[in-house]
Each structure stands twice: as C-alpha cells, then as structure tokens.
Amino acid sequence: MQPLSAIPGIKVRDLSLKFGEQIIFDRLNMDITGGEFVALLGASGAGKSSLLRIIAGLAPPTSGSVTGSDNQPLAGRIAWMGQKDLLYPWLSVIDNVALGARLRGEKVDRDWARHLLARVGLSREEKSLPATLSGGMRQRAALARTLYERQPIVLMDEPFSALDAITRTQIQTLAAELLAQHTVLLITHDPAEACRLSHRLLVLSPYPFGIDDSHSIAGLPPRAPDDLDSMRSQAELLQRLIKAAG
Ligand SMILES: Nc1ncnc2c1ncn2[C@@H]1O[C@H](COP(=O)(O)OP(=O)(O)OP(=O)(O)O)[C@@H](O)[C@H]1O
Image 1: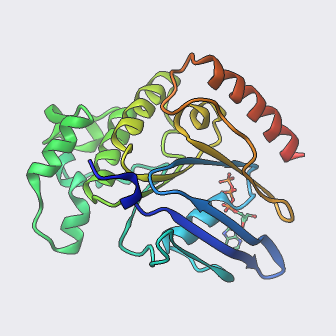
Image 2 (image 1 turned 120 degrees about the horizontal axis):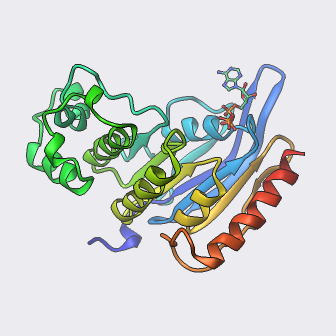
C-alpha cells in the first residue's frame, strides 16, 4: 500500500467558465488532498459536470488552471466513471474491463482484469455479454474498467444514481473499499451517498456563489448506512441544498 502522500491531489486555481454571456462559474479555487474522497453536490445547472469535465481535460476552461497538488499536469493520471456504464454490447465483460488497453492497442493484462472482476464479484460473468447483466452488475463491471486503468485520481459523475437503493448501497460499499488508495471527486445528488462515502463535501451554487466547503461530517468514510452522525449530516446537508437551490 503506498503512502497517501504519494497520491496526487487536485489543485484548481481561479477557474472560470463562460458560455457566451452566461457565466457558469468565476474564479473558483479548490484543493483536494491526495487520497481524499470528496463529494461535489449542488443545484442542477450549477456547473458540476462542467467542472469535472474541465478537471478531466475533456473541455477547456475560459481561464484559470487545474493541476495536481504536485503542480504537475493531471493528464494521464485520471480515470473516469460516468452515469452510463458505456459497456460495448458486443464485447464480453472481461474485454469491456480491459477496453482502455484494447483502444490504445496495448497488450491486455488479463490477470489484472480477472483480479478486478473477482474484487467486484463478477468472476463468473467474465465471458458474458453486458446485455445479460443486471444494472448493478453492469456498474460493477464499469467500476472494474475504471480501476483497470490504475490511475491515482478517479472522477465520478453520478455513477450510481440509476440504481435501486439496495444495489446502490452495496456498490457504494464496494467503491469505498476499492478506491481507498485514490483521490476521488464524486458528483452526486444524493446527500446519503455523499455523507456515507466522503471525507469532505463541496457544494457548488450557481454563479455568483461558487463553492462552499464549510459542511463537515463526523468520522471517517465509509460510514454505515445507519451511522447516526452520517444521518444527522445528511439532514443538515439536505436543508443546505434546499436553501442553496433558492
Ligand atoms: N457546451 C455547452 N454550451 C453551452 N452551455 C453549456 C454547455 N455545457 C453546459 N452548459 C450550461 O452550463 C450550465 C451548467 O451545466 P452542468 O451540466 O455543468 O451543470 P450541473 O451542475 O452538472 O447540472 P446537473 O446537476 O443537472 O447535471 C448549464 O446551464 C448548461 O446548460
């Protein structure tokens, strides 16, 4: 296990995004420490996905910078997991897990892919096609594909939002365990998910308000679904989100 200090964090400085006359955010600053699991919440349209896409290098900001906490570029150090599993229907589960290697023309590390499939409980489905899997199993395959990349930073855009409550709780537990040695930024609309999984919460409000990092949660993640501190934090967070939405 590597020391947390060896895992890069994320440093956002004076980040602005405008679409024409519309200001999405203006001069945002935030720091995520290496090895931290941080949830990003906020009203619909506040700019969460745009912020994540900029951090991932998938879209340019209008101005400002995003680097690792070591001041080095983040390119090549990020893995992504979105709401849609984006599994290729014609590829087996194991070939989907190793999709990044296939797309890059690299030799597939089948032992690593099998190890990850075992970790997410899909060893028996290795040769199955995605259409034969349940929604929860598909997201577990997508989680294995994200981990296959061996990147220290993982950006997640509502990856579990389409799942039923029980499946979601199970995959949250799994994600917390498997992502423990990573820096994670997770967009979620679910206060319970945010409070279960995160060291820290960030709430993004529409311009001109920006990021609020003043909401704290007691204890360390992953918190049990019935953890009393976590439930109290959820209730407070929900009130705060309702207020922030206006
Ligand atoms: N490529 C684009 N061109 C123009 N406007 C855009 C573009 N991408 C996003 N926007 C606008 O930027 C704003 C923020 O969108 P974004 O998807 O980042 O918000 P969000 O907080 O992730 O919302 P949600 O929670 O509903 O997913 C919205 O008003 C959206 O319409």
